[in-house]
Length: 126
Image: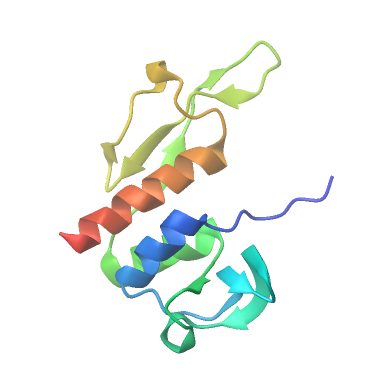
């Protein structure tokens, strides 16, 4: 099985740009060559037009938050479904839970991390 790290989604990319994220990325969100979506395109937010947003991987953005802003984001699950797969992730930002696993809000680590990254970026805007 080939594993790919998930790029942040469009909304998270917009928030990251507002919060000053400006590291090299190999992907971006925006309209390019008549296609709106995620593009494979080397870029930096400071050189992007207003409608293009750098799209780092979730782990890249989490590292930027940790290294530059001392904000820790992680997701954890201790429960498994009948197939033995982890589920019901709790998201933590600086050791504070952002959701309750009993809500079954996030069934994948990546979905939980996206939520956590957005919460962390919202902290930077305050």
